[in-house]
Length: 181
Image (cartoon, rainbow, N blue to C red; front, side, top):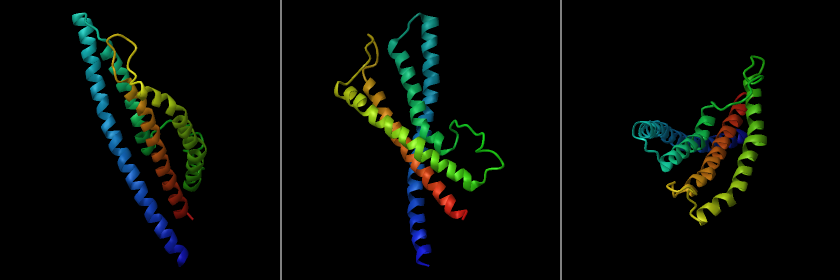
């Protein structure tokens, strides 16, 4: 009886954490998806200006790759949440693998690959980003964008979100394991 009450409390707390993380990830992902439209419009404008009016802009070209980077960086946690990331599904999607085994594969993959990789990126990127913010790094090209440090800062945000979403997935798989017992 006490064991059941304890699991119910942990389950409730885990569900709340999952909901908060998933809501944040969903909001960031949907917001970042609007950057795709902005990027398409920007590229169309840039191409039209270059080919119709022979006027190019370094700042526009840099803004294009900044938006492209933000789409992928900020969309990574959203992609993980919806289980649409790239993975080798040789065994995972097999009919011979049970839901419990899939949960274990996800838990082990998160604990031994996703989280350590994200933490490694955060640790190694921190001085790089800190330096960019300290010097308010901008484009080295004449006519380029002055706020490159903001793009570099998005590395920390993106991998932080990926860690959070990884923790959400980890909790979901723990619940799934408990429910399949």
